[in-house]
Image (cartoon, rainbow, N blue to C red):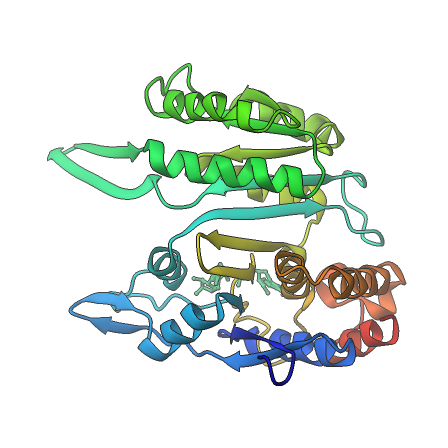
Length: 339
Ligand code: NAD
C-alpha cells in the first residue's frame, strides 16, 4: 500500500484452535511493528456443482495480495467435500511444499542437532487421484509424473538452496523400481544441474535417505532435499518427528508461480480448541517463513529469535504440548517481552 507503506497479506484464520493461534500471530506482529496489514479471508468451503470451491471473495483477496498466512482447516466429513487444503493447492497452483525441520532448544528429543529442509512436489505423483477397479479384487492406482511439474519444483529447490546458502541438493527417489516415473524426475534434475554450478547435485534412493536421516540427521544440515509427492509426505513427517516431537512446532510454505500460502502443519486440534492451550509456534514459524519469502528478513529474525528463546527459557513459558504450563496468551506475552 503506497499510502501506508505496508504490505497487505490475506489471513485465513481457520477452524478449531485457528483463531487463538492467529490472534497470537497478530499480537506479536503488531508488537514487533511488522509493516503488514492483515486482510481477513474466511474460506468456509462451498460445494459448486458437487466440487469443493473456495469462496470468490477469498480467491480474489489471495490473488490480489499474492501472499497468505493460513491456520488449520477442519475437513468436513461425509458431506462430499474434498479437503480444503487440496482445493487451495489446486486453485492457486501451489506446486512446492517447503518443510523445514529444526531442533528446538529447550525441548529434548532424540537429536538436538536437526536442521533439515525438504521440498515436496505438491501436485502429482500418487496424489493425481487416478484409480480404477479393473475387476473386483483388482485395483490400479496410477502415479503421474510429468516433466513440467518436475522441472518447476526442482528449479525451485535449486533456487531455494542457493537463496538460503546450502551448497547441496539431494534428489530423493526410487528410480531402481519406478524406472520411468522417478527416472524422469532424476533425469530432469541432472539436466538442470548445469544452470546451478554452485549447487552440488546428489541423487539418493529413498530407503537410503530414511536410514541416513534416522541415524544421523546432521549430515543433511548443508543440504536441501527434493522429492516426488508421496515420498515428501512421509519424509517430511519423519523429519518433523526427529526434530521437534510436537506438531505444534512445524511450519511450512506452499509455493506457486504467483501465490504463496504459509501454514502450520498441524490440524485444527478440536480436542483443545477454545481452551487457550494451543501452541502458536508452528503458525508463528510459518509467518517467519512468510516474512523471509517477502524479503522482510530483519522482522523475520527478530520474531524467530523471540519465539525460540521463549521456548528455551523454561517450562513456565512453554505450552502444555511441550510439557510446560503456559497458555496461548501467556506464551504470546512472553514472546513479546523478548522481541
Ligand atoms: P491435529 O493436528 O488437529 O491434532 C493432532 C494432535 O496434536 C491433537 O492431540 C492436538 O491437540 C495436537 N495439536 C495439534 N496442533 C497443536 C498445537 N498448535 N498446539 C498443541 N497441540 C496441538 O490432527 P487431527 O486431530 O487428525 O485433525 C483435526 C482436523 O484438522 C481434521 O478435520 C483434519 O482434517 C484437519 N487437518 C487440517 C490440516 C491443515 O489445515 N493443514 C492438517 C491436518 C489436519
